[in-house]
Length: 343
Image 1 (tube, rainbow, N blue to C red):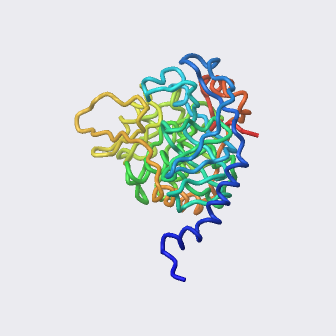
Image 2 (cartoon, rainbow, N blue to C red):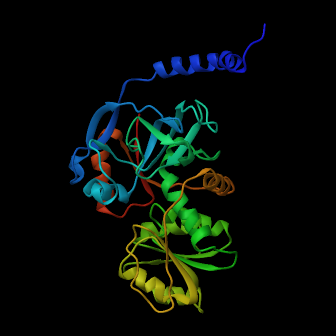
Image 3 (cartoon, one colour):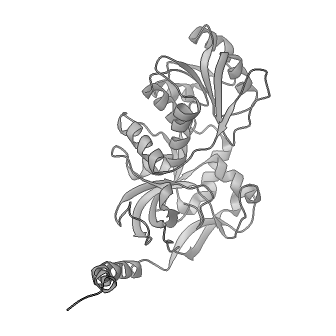
């Protein structure tokens, strides 16, 4: 009996499609999510019951274990119209980690059960402050072997920002000197480690003895208090001819003092969202956004897995207390990253 190619392919795919349908049926119809119904202070971020998103053809559905909380999330909460076309209720959160529970028909890189982490700014189907999130597969990576779910959930945004600042914006090389301004913050604690991995010597700024101690423990060769210390004097002692590069992870007057420490022709980079410096003759700052993608995650994982990588967690909150997490980050002096736990 002659069987058409299309029919034969249908027979081969039928068991897989049947399995997918059974698996999808096991997913709950609704989930808990921390969302806003209007812009405002932390109190507008409340617990909602919302439909579980269904992944599109190029998306994966992740059962979220941990979501990161960034200062940028508070900006979206207050002024979502500045970042996107808000559709309320708006689930916040740009990154997190969890387990793949469903995949779209066009996705080949991931399977159900894969442990993954993801950064997805202005995610099409809502953010990571939820028990489930559907994310374009291109913005998802497998969790590095030496990280657990909580650590991975804390860092997708910050680790991509840190590594791409070190590698792609500044092109740090072995033996160069870099001043990392904000070395104890969510991005800074990772940037210090990546800069050391590339063989650079690191001068870190931080605020207070606890932050300075943290930056030292992560590998900074020297530290200075960015608020009360003499940044320029510390930099001249660290690199008498001026530092080769500045990674600015906070803005304002202290960043200007960091730039004073640059050697002629030195490089300055800062993530978009940081208030940039005043224009200066001969200075061409590089502002950049973190970019997720398969190659970017592969490079990030290679860097993380080659280190005794540390992920400082400043505080953990349950999903229902997302508003408290925002209040905590807005209070400042956060050593590392704040996260939300779904369970």
